[in-house]
Image (cartoon, rainbow, N blue to C red; front, side, top):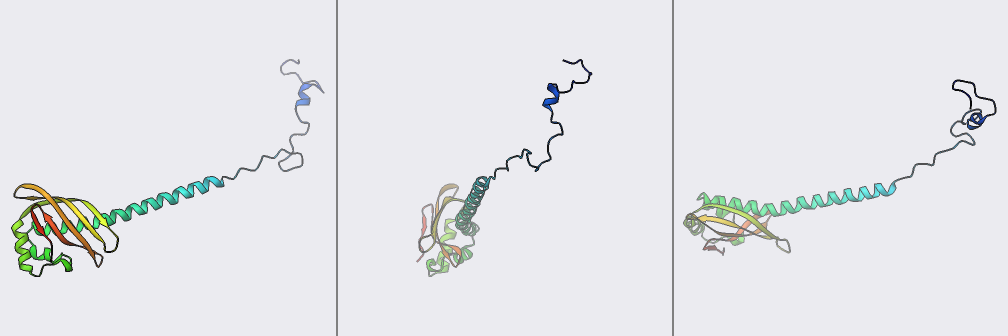
Length: 174
């Protein structure tokens, strides 16, 4: 073994370990080439599938939320009119086929109930044939919380109350 810093002997082990002229340039005959990178097509297909699934689920969720919130909003608007003693306006919010023949009798009926507040928070929508919905919650009458149920119909893309039960008071339309 040569001393550190001493020239290496010709033809020794060290000279055999190194190529005499260096490595050939990439792409030259005899040069080692790396294998082509593996395509990850399956990964992109999988990511695309999950992306479309997430968008589809999100879109359906938005549609279901809108379908459920519209009847609740219509029911709350109707109950607000009754709570504020605006029976004539509430009458106009009824579905046409469910309006009683006598507007004044309807106003007298709802004004006699005299609800103080309401909380409608449960909805069931039926979309087979004619779109109908049932909205339920509570109504406060004479200081006591009581059950409230409004049956609605979709008329010309608007939800309209057809009949309702506020505590012991029942309005069944015609």
